[in-house]
Length: 103
Image (cartoon, rainbow, N blue to C red; front, side, top):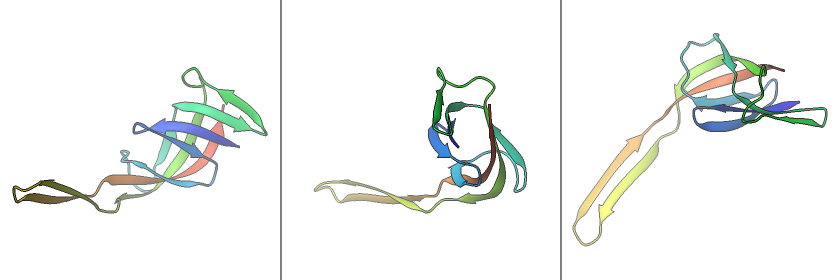
């Protein structure tokens, strides 16, 4: 059984027991989190697709950690002008352990 949930403007395929990194959610480690925007559920080969989401479906999980993702480098330059600028960015992410998928 797996589900497709939408959070933080992205879609994730999750199964019970998975640990996924999503955009930062409010809460501390150990808090429960619920994803109510479930787009699709596959259970024993039976596909249920929402329009745009499945009513009364939810995915429940638990926050494992709040942390920051790896650093990405943002580099700007203009040719032949000697202009160069380098910046780094680390996005805040939340690791969530998926517990239950229900309809």
